[in-house]
Image 1 (cartoon, helix red, strand yellow):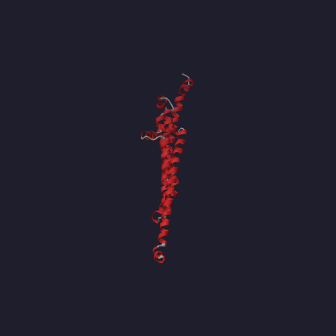
Image 2 (cartoon, rainbow, N blue to C red; image 1 turned 120 degrees about the vertical axis):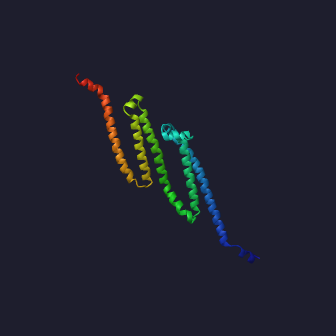
Image 3 (tube, rainbow, N blue to C red; image 1 turned 60 degrees about the horizontal axis):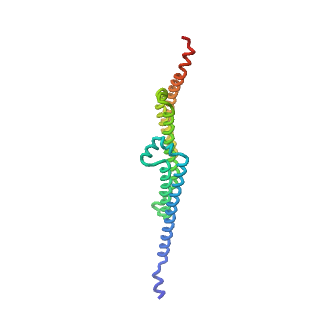
Length: 219
C-alpha cells in the first residue's frame, strides 16, 4: 500500500509549494512592516514640522498658499510624503523578494535611485518655498512708499526668479542631468541682475543723500 502512495508524492511539487508559502510570508511581513513604519514615520515627521513652525513660513510663500487652498498644511504635506515614500519603497522591496527576472533589475535600479530622487524633490520644494519667502520679505519688509521709491517689488521678483533658477539648477544637478547650458544662461542673468541692482542702489543712495547734498552745496 505504501509503495502505491509514495510515487504519488512529488518532492519537487512540495518544494515549490513551500517556496511559494515562504515568499508569500516574506512579502506579507514586508508590506505589513512598511505600512506600520510608514504611519509612524508620517506622524513623527508631521509633528516635527509643526513644532518647528514650518506652517507659518508655509503661509508666506506662493507655493504654500496654493497648497493651503487645497487643504494641505506644511505638516500635512510632510506627513503624507513621508508615509507614501515608505509605502512605495516597501511595495518595491516586497516585489524584489519574489525574484521575478522581468522586474527585479528595474526595481533594483529604481530603489538605488530613490534616495537621489527624494533629495532632488526636497531641494525643489524647499528651494521654491525659500525663494517665495525671501521675495515676500523684500516686498513687504518696507512701507508702501519705500517699496515704490526703491522698486522693491521689482527687486523682490528678480530675486525670486534668480533663486528659482538656482533651485532648478541644483535639482537637475542632483539628478545627474547636464546643466551646462543653464550655467551659460545663469551668467548672463547674473550680469543683468547685477547691473540692475547697481543702478537701483545708486538711485537709493542718491535719494537718501539728496538732503545732505543740498545742505553742502551753497545757494
